[in-house]
Length: 248
Image 1 (cartoon, rainbow, N blue to C red):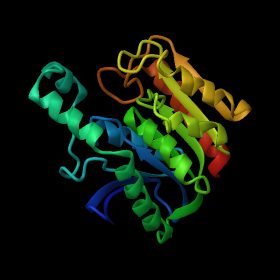
Image 2: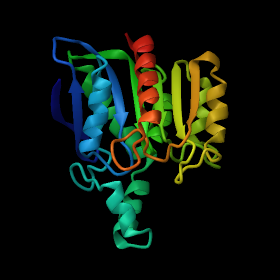
Image 3: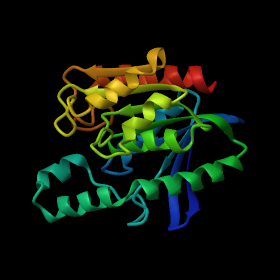
């Protein structure tokens, strides 16, 4: 497995991007991975490796580079502080303050960089996201329908809102294949709150896969305290199957 950290110039500075891919000459089909809220940390590396082992070049842009390179906090440490703590409030401000527009501009810079990379197959591409990263997945397929042909969202957050431009509204027009995995016991984004997203995925017919995993809480697909193999394993299996069908 080849691994590197790249530096991408954006309008706001220099963004670090984690890259993992199999050894070999390539080019490899690209999967953009949007990490979860707590940031790029060792468990993020494990997630990227798991997808890359399927034969893909996985690129993970650092959402929080405007604060510092690879800013992160372990979820267990965050919740131990409590929602009224300064640590939690600071993190929440960073999470929500990194807007869709910022993430979209960063993605544009990343895609332009990949266009000149001989190891990266330009299109079609896949995209996978966890937590807030699933919201970024839906924004990405809306803004780059020519690029992304496979999309995966795991324990999604803020994907179905009351806003006129709620991310889930982009799903029915998606021309590719999509998998969304939700935890039945998700305490942050309940299955009920995700129901409009599930309805939107259903409109894709046999190209849409919406699964509620029994016993799974938020974060079930990321190694750590909430990880649940009975939900994570079939989710990754489905993701790799979809990427294999649509990208290779």
